[in-house]
Amino acid sequence: MGVPQVVIVGRPNVGKSSLFNWLAGRRLAIVDDRAGVTRDRVTQLVEYDDRFVELVDTGGIGIVDADNLTEHVERQIQIAIDSADVILFVVDTRAGLTPMDSDISQRLRNVPAPVICVANKADAPSLDVQADEFYKLGRDPIIRVSAREKRNRDELWSAVFAALPKQVDEETPADPVMKVAIVGRRNVGKSTFVNTLSQTERMIVSEVPGTTRDSVDVRFELDGQAMMAIDTPGLRKRKSLANDLEYYSLHRAQRSIRRADVVFMFFDAAEPVSQVDQQLCAYIDENSKPCVFVVNKWDLYTGKVSTEEWAQYLHDEFRTMRHVPIAFITGQTGKNIKALVNHGQMLFKQARTRVTTGELNRVLRAVIERNPPPLYKNRRPKIYYATQVGIEPPTIVLFCSDPSAISPNYQRYLIGALRERLPYAEVPIKLYTRSRSADGAEKRPKEPPLFDDQAVPVAKRRKGEAADAEIPLPTDWQEDADADFDELPDDEE
Image 1 (cartoon, helix red, strand yellow):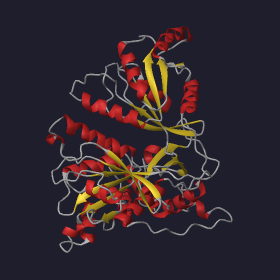
Image 2: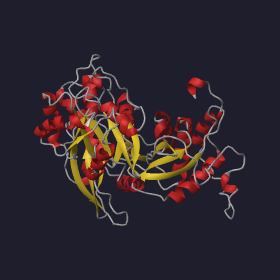
Image 3: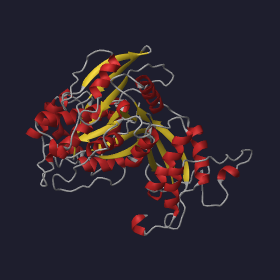
Image 4: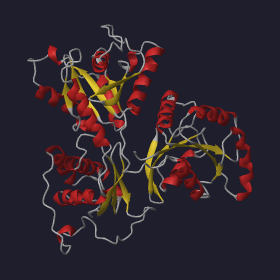
């Protein structure tokens, strides 16, 4: 499974952002007495007791945003709730139970993730009894904490880990059903593709754009392997949304992307990339979903342009998704459909792959020796080791002397280099940087770092251990790294 998500929700001004910063051990979310400061989701990887979770802060439920962004805030909250493994429902001990708390509690009753009620602002034991009022919400137990006074942090973490899904034994064989979301703008042949895939007239097919109004699950088998195709409504630009039905179709399509294992992003061979395509791909990328770019209706375009030219065109349009494979199919006749589905299965397996810490660090050492991290404040940061902490997508934590010194460009270089050498070449990879110690303070490691300030790499100085050979890296990521090695102004560092 991926890194579990622990989502913090509640009405405005109950101390959600303070709780987030306290649990994360860093001041990441803005804390202010004014309601509505937090709008977007704020996430942070947190380690506690040798386990990792992704902590998610959300905006206040029920806030009326001064800049007319209430709809945006609410959508971000719902996305966080839908993806949560555990929800921390935060209430205010000093203010007591409010009608808004009751409304939020009612909203969370149909959420499949476990909900923990966190009574914040219980700054002293004498205030704990005031939290008993929240038992009226039907939540048990009530965890009394104070982010301000740092009370009962261990008790809260214990409740979180008790509520998290049990980790599946890695040696237990599993044969999960792959869920594939079929997405794209209107009339690119998604429903025709699903009908061909399932070998039935499962979906209504029409030349009228917008025939499919809701996301529909279609179960099918290929070579004895069961799978689920999620046909989604065709989308168009937001300003063109004609009515509420199309508005909700958009959100159902986004929800289908979030719950899919693999996404087939459809393009029409006769049409250029549109703004809708850009928005969909950005959403797929944001959610770290394995994806295949599918150029449909290729039979109508054969001979006019080569597959290499189309592939280069897509890679130029979506530069952050150059790892995404590209398929050319004809949905109506079924040409290349089986190969496409088999490739989707391969991406599904890649996203579920876990490599050992030893293998990961052998590759990482060679990558760093080839191109060490750039200087930061006239010093080269130390990288100690890395470990994979999750799958779907593969999630790697890089332990270093100073996370802020590992620039975004260098992180992109590392991701690209690791993708080339590890068994997940075509799927998204999440990379987090962490200090060597859990509290953010640098500690002297027991083992030498993979790379230090000296000219000779550590790997070549260890007795009895041969240095790793140089590993050729992809050109694109080499360019990113080279650009980062030049000295930058302080404001760009």
